[in-house]
Structures are given as C-alpha cells and as structure tokens.
Length: 141
Image (cartoon, rainbow, N blue to C red; front, side, top):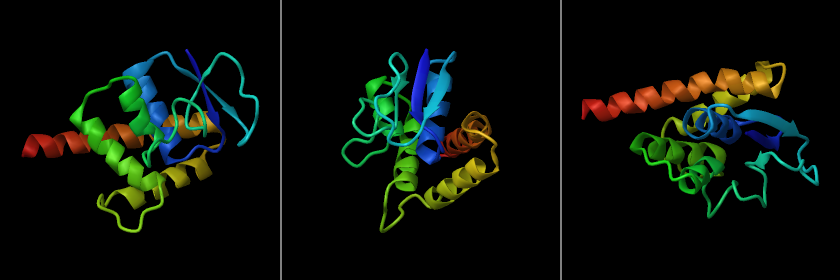
C-alpha cells in the first residue's frame, strides 16, 4: 500500500513510518508532498497531515492515533506513544525524560539525510532501539 505525508519528516512522521512498516503494512511505500499541498494525491493513505483520518487528535500525536485506528495493542507501543506525544507537541513539563532528546535526534536525522526516504530508513533504527530498550525495562520489573 502507498502512504503519503508532508516532506521534511520529524519525530512523529518517522515514528509513524516505523509503526506502519513494522506493525501495519510491511510492504508500505511512502510518498512525500510539500507542506500544505492540496489536493493530496488520490490513492495513497495520508498521515500526519491536518484534517486527515490519521493525524493528531485530542492533543495526541499521529502515532497515538494510528495505534487506535489499527487496533494495535502492545504496552510498549503505548509507552512509545506517550514519549512521542511529548516529543512532538508543545509541553511545559516533560514526564517522559527521553522525549526532548528523541525530538532532537530525529531533527538531526532529517538534517543529515539527503531525502525523506533516507531519513525514514535511518530513523527506523532509533525507534527499533527505543522499542527494545522499553521492552527490556518491562522485563526487568
């Protein structure tokens, strides 16, 4: 399936692409359009674009919305959604100490990547590592 989002990916779009490939659609292909482009291409499923089904909802990031829409049940992904919520939305206080660093690293990945596909590929390693680290915390308890 094809998916479309805005170019210049950041923490939420990188996280969503990882979630899509790992948990929703292993054959996913991603397309990118300029910020604000209308109309969106017909066919691909849009995500993390205001006004589409898979976007921010009630103060939560798109990653959080995708977990709900696709009924993905995993406590580690729920914790990741909390972290990504804080990393991607304006916060006065961070309850998740890794959130600001995650946003910072994803910005860096975007800056060193020649294009958005490369940024998604590089960023997927960050989210794979975050998932494994959070899993190990659960196993330690």
